Structure formats: structure tokens, C-alpha cells
Length: 440
Image 1 (cartoon, one colour):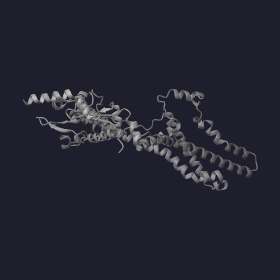
Image 2: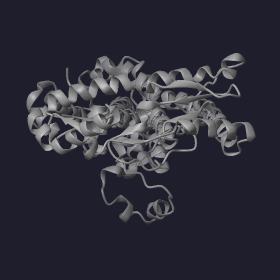
Image 3: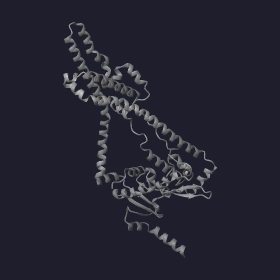
């Protein structure tokens, strides 16, 4: 079984010497999963176990443990290779939608131009006067003059420099997108992913950090700002919402003389080095969804090209109804063959972002309600009344921090057991002397 990437990342961030509580807090993992993962990682990466006199265990890892694992596991090498390949593939997928849009516009403009030229040529052959030829000539050159040379300005890298008017518009833009035009098309269509994809990870990291900051003992009100639903009625009164937290970090409840419940997490009180107060948010705040991270100018351009694409599709559909494609054949016949795809793409290009816009608004309204509820719980905690202060004070009776220092170790897998006993000879003799004196 390959080691857990989250555990490996946490070990690196914590300085390669950790306890189960350190990793569970840092990675937001279940205590049991963190313990199992650390054992697997230590076994596969040549890590060492350090046991203190009180029985707590610290794990020490070599700083090159990723290289050791990479040489040992084909799966890890394949994962790293696929991650690189997927970055390239996903980039190609992102830009493909913009490429398809431009190709669609170009294909339809060429097809429309060919059909109009053909129609005008037929009119010229049937006409007897020169006036109709002049009219026809105007029809032939109408599209190129109408759309103008600026249609594909984005192919020119110095467009903003050569066009003073657009240069001024660009300079007043408050947000300059780092995306190129083709990436902006994908962002306009589908957005830029879930901004809260790591919400659960952040939630459990904040909860673990809050417990650590309280030295392993908390009241439910200290955890509530990081949870979503607290339940109603007796569920909220009896703090059922704390059950997942207790399960996650192997905690257990303690009842005060006044009948108040507090929660004690012994395994989060043990650490490989002294822990200072962690920076933890006052409450879990979900990030608002954005319609697109593309700049306003890129979005307007995408809308304009989408509208142009749809108009061309409708115009082309009208021109193809007369059966002219069969007469002209070749390129026009090919465009007629793929016309349903072009039409669907043209409609979808504007419909999908429109639907997504309203979906984002709905999503953000619900998100803001949850943020407000959690903020209100944080406010209650900050303005704690007498009862809550007494409850938190009782929880602090169980607060502690056990640091596993080198001098506390009675065993480590780094060296042979006999060598360790020789090194600790004086300490062992002193311990035996103390026990003899206590028995006498």
C-alpha cells in the first residue's frame, strides 16, 4: 500500500519529527488513519520510532524519504508522471473550446461568402444591365467590410499598443487577467473550479488547531464556528454535533459538577516539539463562487464572439435551405454536414454561461447564509457569558501539552537496543536505586 500523500506533506511541513496528534491536526485526518498512515510511511521510508518513558511515540523520518519511496514504489512514479501529463492535457482541453469557437466562426464566414458569391454570380449571368452587377459587387464585399480587419485583432500581440482607444480602455481596467484569450473562453464557459474544494480539509485543520490552541480540552461552543449544521432541539442541546469531532480525534466527554459537558483529546496533547498558538480563523469561511476569473474585457469579447458565432449560424442555416450546398459541393457541402454541430455549439456557448451565472448567484446566497451562521457562533464565543466562561474554565482543567524530548526517550529504532541500554546505563541505575529506596 502506497503512503498517504497528505501524511507525507504534513511530515515535511512539521520538520520530519512528528506524533500522531501532530499529523492528525496538520492534515485534518482521523487519528486512527493518521496512526496507521504513519506506521506505513515509517515502514516504507525507513522512518524510526521514538518511545518516551510515559509510552508516547514520536516518528522520525529522513529528509529524503520521498526519494526512497519513489525508488520503491512504481505507483508513486506513475502518479507523478500522470500529474505532469494531466497538466498538459488539461491545458489543451481548456484552450480547445476557444479554438473551436474561432474555427466555427471562420468556417461559417467562408461558407457564407462562397454562397453569396455564387448567388451573385448567378444573378450576374441572368441580368442584362450593369446596375445589377454593381449591386452584386456591393453584396460580395459587404461581409469583409462589415466585419472589418479588427475581427481577429487578438491574433496581434501589439494590438493594444497600435490602437490608442483600446489602450486607454485597458489602462483603466482595475483587474488584469493572467489568462490568455483561449483560456478565458474556457473560464467564461465553465468557470474556474470550486473555490471550496478544500473546505473539509480546512475545516478539520481549523478544528484541530482550535483544540491544540486550547491544549487538548475544549467546550462545544469553541468548535461550533467551524461546523455547518448543529441540529435542532435536543440534538443541539445535548451537543450531538460534537460526535464527528470526537470520532475524528479520539476525544471523550467530561462532565463538570454543574452538569456541563466538555471534551478532552489526549492524543492531541502529545507533540514532538513545543507547539505555539496556531493561527486559526475565528470561524470557517467559505469562499464565494466567481462567475469567471477572466478580465471584464475578455468576458465581453467572449460574449461578442459568441453572439457573432450564433448569428452566423442562423444566417448560414437560412442560406443552406435552398439546397445550394448540393450544387456547390466541396467545402460548402462539408459545412452543411457539420452544421447541426455548429448550431448546437453556438447556442450552447451562450446558454451554458447564462445558466451558470444564475446558478452561481443561487450558490452564493446559500453560502453566505452558512457563513453568517458560523460568524454568529464565533460572536457568541467572543462575548461569552458567565456560564460559558465557567464551562471553558472547567475544560482547562484537562488542558496539557506533553512534549517528547530526546532526554525522555527510553527506546528508539535508530540504534541497537543494547547500545541504547549502554548509553542510558547511568539513567537505568538511578531508576533502580530510586525504586529500591521507595520499597525500603
